[in-house]
Every structure is written in C-alpha cells, then in structure tokens.
Length: 211
Image 1 (cartoon, rainbow, N blue to C red):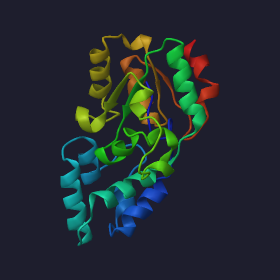
Image 2 (image 1 turned 180 degrees about the vertical axis):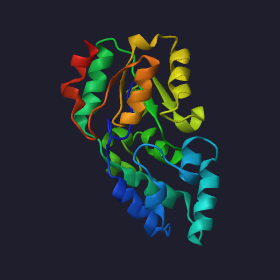
Image 3 (image 1 turned 90 degrees about the vertical axis):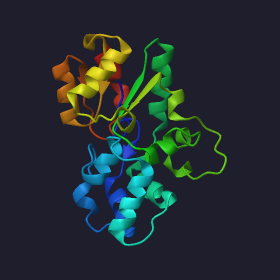
Image 4 (image 1 turned 180 degrees about the horizontal axis):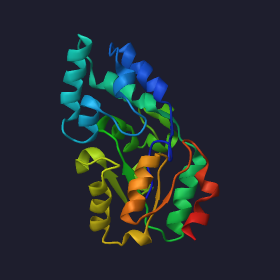
C-alpha cells in the first residue's frame, strides 16, 4: 500500500501555496497542508464537493473567475518530481507477485494528471498535448482515492474499508506513507508500516520491511 505525495512523487508545498496565492487566495498557507487538507480544500479531497464547486468557491474567495485549468495548475504545484527509481521498483514488486495498492488523499485536479499518460513522464509533462507515457493506474492493481471513497487518511475507517474491499487481513499488508499520523493509525489497525521521510529513497529499504 503506497501513498502518492511524498512517496511516489516528491512534494513542493510552498510552490502550490505560491500558485494559489497568485490566483488571489491570500490565506492559502493557512488551509493547505502536505498531508491532509482543511476547509473547502479538504471538502474537495474528501468528496463532499466536486471540482466545479471547488472552482466556484475559489472564484468567490478570490473575487474573479478562476478556470478549471488555473485550479489544476495550482494544485499541480504540489507535484515536484517523479523519480524513475520509484516507477522501476513498482514494476519490480509486481513482477515479484505483490498486489500493489495506491492509498491517496487527493482530488480530481491532481488525478487528471496522474490518471493520464503524462503521469509516468513526470509533473513537467502534465500539459503535454500527446504524452507517450503511462497513467498511474498502470502501476497499481487498485487505487483508493479519498475523494471517491469520501474518506481521508488518517481516518481508521479509510484503512478498514480498504482491507474489507481487498478481503485481506491487515497482517498481510505493508503501508508506506511519509505522514507519521497516517502510519500510526494504520499500525493501530494491525497493518505493517514504513514511514520514510518525504522524498526519501524508499526503494533501498522496502524489501527489508517486506521480509
């Protein structure tokens, strides 16, 4: 079980904050978090509002019309880089017979890139007209996305829902997430956990945890 931001991709929260502030959201740093959003950002990631409602609320708060593309550009400020070693390890793990799951607090704007062929080419390819890459879904057997589940990590129900859907005991799972509060709750549920630092090269250690 893999987190997306901070594990599969490296993060640049200050850049995301800068982009939203450039759109006119002056209190962006107060409501934007590396791990779990709050306010109407959190409502989007927990599926309480859709992308269009978010766009309308952002337009209201900034005092001018903000387009879907502008919202998407601002959200993608979070995505700093996609190390090729991470994709290589995901492919290796699947070849070794592991079932791979993505567990992410995310939203339709971020996933419009991640679920496109531009994903495997990195964030810089997000706006490429005809990317010749692979979507994130090509690297995972199942993607558990907060805005579709209407649940967010570190809610215990999030993890229990995944386990029920997978029909697997927690002791058979390893969860990799850079947020200590997320791995703490997963551990309480009985899932094995690994909490690398944000951007750490976890590919060098993951087999130690799998053993």
